[in-house]
Length: 128
Image 1: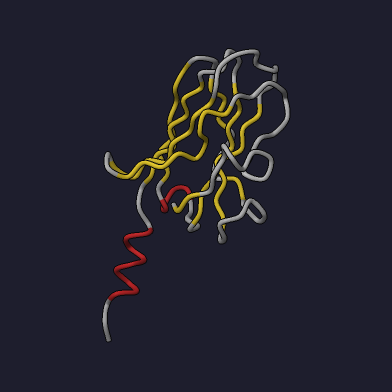
Image 2: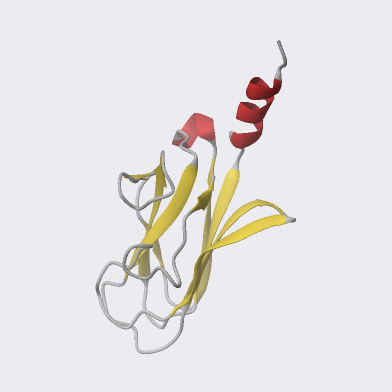
């Protein structure tokens, strides 16, 4: 019997980093979420919320043995104080050649939660 399913599972269970580029003029709270399906529905939080100060960059590295593993990942973002300038960009990084945007230049101007269901043109779900 071919060894492909086992090899494929090992390939999917890799370490990733989530890089948060907060160019907003206020802090942002990021929740990393993972799910069985590529949909916001049914996603669960991975780890604790991350607060990133305004005009700074932060990152978290996730590994299946410490974070658990589900095939899809996304984020939600919320600002405790409404920003008046700037944008938010978040990347899922597997390697220097494999980087995908989870949030693409999202201009938050309120204190609401932003995710792939509220801002589908700017917030995305990607494979782990």
